[in-house]
Image (cartoon, rainbow, N blue to C red; front, top):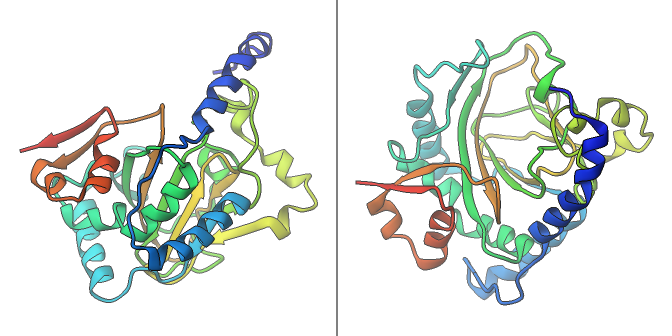
Length: 280
């Protein structure tokens, strides 16, 4: 749907004010997920995330933890053909039936990085488990340079198989995440930036590929420009968790017993979402 540019101009001041409040930290926020011995390392990565818009932790999940995630992923996507892509499997609601995948969404060290970035309460807002089969290259929708039209939002991506730099990876334009968009460029077709990136001489050196060995984790601000890449190389198995501090919450279901056994800060990450549903 085409947006009326004149109406978008009228809506822009309120749109920017909402985004400013969305990003404003809360000085009283004091969540911590790791002890002091790991907080300095997490703070270093938080500063990198603030500067670059993305941090990569190559092979972060390994050994038994990785094997458990891979097995849970296989069960979560089995037989779940994506309604949007004939060459993909998709599950958007898996934590109730596959709680073995919760440790990826609520990992202590990764949450410590994110709490430093937000500086305020935040919650898990969406989940997806996706297997992308090899196909011919695609150049539309999410396979164009874009920002997610939800303002400041952290995404946590976990690669569950090896993804080469020229494979079906996500590409991210470093240092593009701090921009405030007017109403038109913050919604719909305005959020596509293919021509802008093509005309930017700094884009090649600023582009980073979210690729690496199985277990690699990427945390990125989805307000930054990024693009998915589909091609006929190896498949990509990925868990994606989205976290927001206000607005754009979506229903996320957990088993009640799984949430009740979490320590308080992690329980907050689950239940601060007003659409969190505890089952059982």
